[in-house]
Image 1 (tube, rainbow, N blue to C red):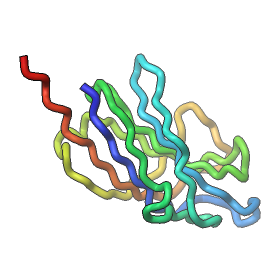
Image 2: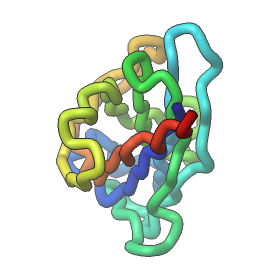
Image 3: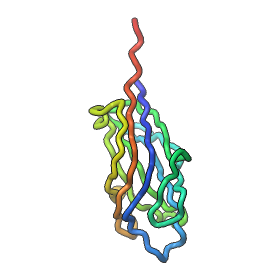
Image 4: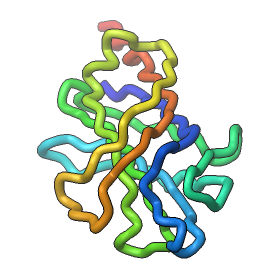
Length: 146
């Protein structure tokens, strides 16, 4: 059964972003991946401020709902990018095994996660900082009655 995963981006703090860089324009890229399936990518969540510590404006493009199948194998990937810096704009990511949300299914929680380097992207600058997000995994829909 497909469940709905709600993700809200709030703020990134403590980023290792050089002041000499062009004025940054941060976005959060959100996707759900499965080991043996194509990832489901959502639209980017743009930050409302251009700065080295982006915030995401409440009620304006900061929340996304994603369909999730095979919850036990799915992973949520939140990556933070400065689109003004081109391919070198990776600022860090948060990876979360969605099955862990089964313990609190149906409940909303907000947490600040430490940003980590990408396993596949090798950036020139070290990744630092935290990313505050809100997440809720909905209950699975009821099974059809026979």
